[in-house]
Amino acid sequence: MINSENNIVSELLDLKVTQVETFDRDITAGKTREYYESCEVTRATVFRNKLSGKVGNFIQNFDVEITVHGNEFVSSCTCNNNRQICKHAVALLYAWVFDGGDFLNVAHVLEEINKLDKSRLMDIIKNMIRYNPNLVDIFLAKDKLDWDEIDSDPFI
Image (cartoon, rainbow, N blue to C red; front, side, top):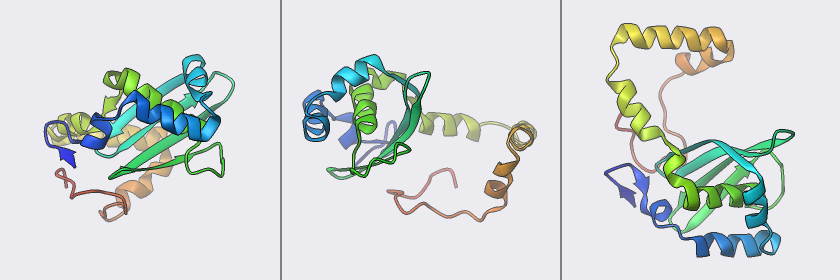
């Protein structure tokens, strides 16, 4: 269920440390909290029913994404662990429950982008493509929702 004030699902807003500790016990016998305390979570974002970020240290870090569907948490991680949820995803969940206020709320960013005038947006897009030419496909693609979008995008 989406909280209309900030577009974050209640399952994430109401997530408790005890729930994360249950994932932790199931995945690593409770050792992920120690890992979370020694690792770094960067580029942490939240958007509706998704958390994402980089988890690791200066030598090795992993891109983690967690999607919530009701009471089900589905994750993907570049560590390629065959488990549904790896220790990096659990560390991201710990980061959310302890430091959720530090996560960038993508909905707020989209609201600010929506206020920009066309010439400013064009400058931003040009710079993005110059910086990463692979992004050009994004701007040429037709709009379609991801399979896991939970409601229609208010910015389309």
